[in-house]
Structure formats: structure tokens, C-alpha cells
Length: 499
Image 1 (spheres, rainbow, N blue to C red):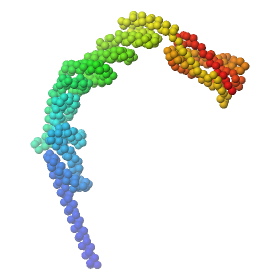
Image 2 (image 1 turned 90 degrees about the horizontal axis):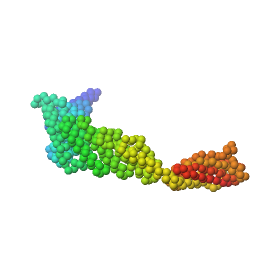
Image 3 (image 1 turned 30 degrees about the horizontal axis):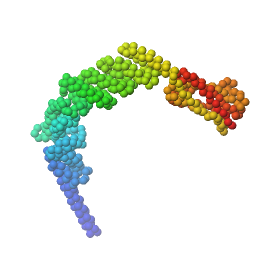
Image 4 (image 1 turned 135 degrees about the vertical axis):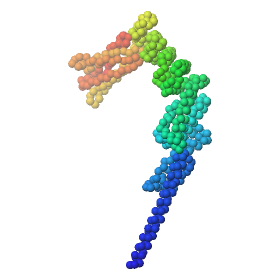
């Protein structure tokens, strides 16, 4: 019994020793990690990014436990290690003089780690300062290389770059607050230089030999700057520049006959036109361009689209010189359209176009001439009607058999093979038995109705009948009518009714 107690006592003593030793080791492991974390944070705070990153890499590698008391050790290391790595990557590219790559890396760093511009963090401030400085260098380089569109895009980005505004410098020891304030000061200096340099981009762009090729981009970029930065360029300069640019663009469009795409782009530019600049000169150019387009359409026989263009000028730009001439131009277009229709033998449509001029444009200079042309076209129409006849053809089966239900059914197809005018016919007739008796509803003739056959077209009509007394007899219908020019037409439809 005494030996048993002694064994238990030894066991508990050993167990307590193991617990104390383990606790000491765990505490030492934690304490070392806490010292590493404190030292890493100090390096991070002081801007010693390389040393801080090295310490955080050690912590993340040697302290995989992230719960309980070890949260104090690993919390910062988990998110500050990738932040420092990305910052040092961007900073390294900057040091190597790889400006474009560095700009992209700084932008990615800020988007990834400070999407809302959080606090006055030291690395946030350093990255912001480096980004605006590098961007200014890059945009000046682009401008010298004649890449004006890309330069303007970057200038606009710099103008939109926001200062932090929430910095809290607290003396020589407040590294973060001082860095934040310095980044804001650098940003304001850069934006001031941008406002000074940006107008020069457009001046250089305008004297570039490739200006006309890029004219649409020039206008859209110019208007975007004027709208976002009012007062940046004197209003007189803006108006003259836009008038010149729009005129060059219009001439380019009309020279290449690229009206559809050109006018669409022109209207897109008009939608973003600066509100503080008079629109009248630009509307004058656009109306003029629609007029030139209409002339081009008339020359190519597209009178309908030309009319649409002139009507658009009247509706949208009535006060322009093109708008004041639009009614006269419309009357002339309808007259040309009518003449073309007469040449094609479409006298009725031609007369309608002439009549439209008298109705809609009675004050135009060609009204008297149009009245003479209407009489002339009417004479031509009367002669044409006299000599032009429809060529009617009717196809139907000469005989049909009864189906299982004892019914005869057939179709008759009327065609107009001349292709110039149509005709109208009405049908009437009888079912005649083999003894010669005529059968119709209530003793009256059967009315087959009316068919209208268009020029060069065809129309179908069908009929069916039943009755044992009609076997061996026939159906007989007389179709009578006239063509559109009044010429008489007569067609007999006769179908024998077989058993």
C-alpha cells in the first residue's frame, strides 16, 4: 500500500513537471512571437518596409496558429505581409526607372489595399505621392511623343485625383501624418501643373499632321475637358477651336461620303457639347452636312432618304441657312423624283409627287413649272393607259372527280403576265346538269365574288359543289372586269364534273 502511494506521488510530480515545462515552452514560443510582432510593427510604422516584410514573413511561417493568445502575434502579419510585398514591388519598379510598370503597380496596390483611401497610412501616402509624380512624368512623355489622346486621358485622371484631406501631422515624430500632408501637397502641385500644361496639348495636337485623322477624338476629348474643367481655357478660344474642328470634320465626312457613320459621330459629339459655348455655328455646319448628304442621295436616285434629310433640317435646324433653303430643296427633290418616275412609266406616282409640291410647298419658286409638268405627265399617263393593257391568264382544271364524300373541289389561279398593270374581275355562273338544267342558290346565279390581281402577280379562288344530279354535267362561270387602264376583260371558267 505504501509502495502504491509512492508511485502515484511520483506520477503526479512528473506530470506537473511536464505541464510546467510545456507551459514555459508555450509561453516562450508566444513571447518570442510577440516580440517579433512588436518589432515588425515598429519597422512598419517607421517606414522600414524591407525589415518589416522580413519579420512578417518569419511570423507567418513560424506561427501558423492564429487563434487564442497567438492572435496578437499573427493578426498584423496576415494582411500586412501582402501589402508590403506589393508596395515594395511597385517601389522597386520605380527605382529601376520602369515608369509605366510602376504606375500600374502603384494603382493596383492602392486598389487592392486601400480602395477607400483608408486613414493616413504611411504606405498609402507614399504610393499616392509616387503615383501622381510618375503620372506627370509619363503624361509629359506622351505629349512629346505626339500621343495626345493618351496624354489627355492621363491629364484628366490627374485632375480627378483626390487629395486625402484628413491628414493629422503632429510634429517630427508623426511620420504618417507628415507623409500624408506631404502627399497632399505634391498632389496639389501636380494638379496645378496639369491645369497649366493641359491647354498646350490641344494646341500641339492641332498642328500635328495627323490631326484630321483624329478629328473626332480631338473634339470629344476637348469637349470632355471643357465640361469637366470650366474656365480652364478662355471661352473665346474654346468657341473658335470647336468651330474650326467641326468644320474640318464635316469636310472630311463629305469628302469621303461617309455620311452615316460621320453624322452619327457628329451627333454623339453634339450631345456632349459644352453648355457654356454657343451651339449655333455647330448646328449650321451639321445642317449644311445633312444638305450635302441629301444632294449626294439625289444624285444616286435615293429620293426618299434625301427627303428625310431635308425634313430633318426643317425640323431640327430651321433657323440655319440650310433650314431656310430646305423647303425649296424639298420641292426640287420631289420634282426630280417625279421626273424619274415618269421615265420609269410610273405616271400615277409621278403625278402624286407633283401634287405634293403644290400642297406642301405652295410658296416655292417652281410651283408654276410644276403645274405645267402635272398637265404634261397627265397627258403621258392618258396615252400610256390607252396603249398599255393587262395580260390576264386563268389556270383551272378542265375536269375534276368527286372525293370520298361526293364533293367536287378545285381552284382557279388568275395571273397578270404583263407585269405593268393589274386587273379586277367578278365571277358569276351556274352548275349545269347533264340535261342542261342550270342550278344556283334559290334558282339564282352563283356569285363567285371579286378578285384583284396586282401587276405581275397572281390570285387564287376556289369552289366546291356536291349533288348526284350533277354527275356528268359541268360548272360554268363567267369572269368579267377590266384592267387598271379600263380595258375590258372576259374569262370563261368551265369545269366538267366526273363521277
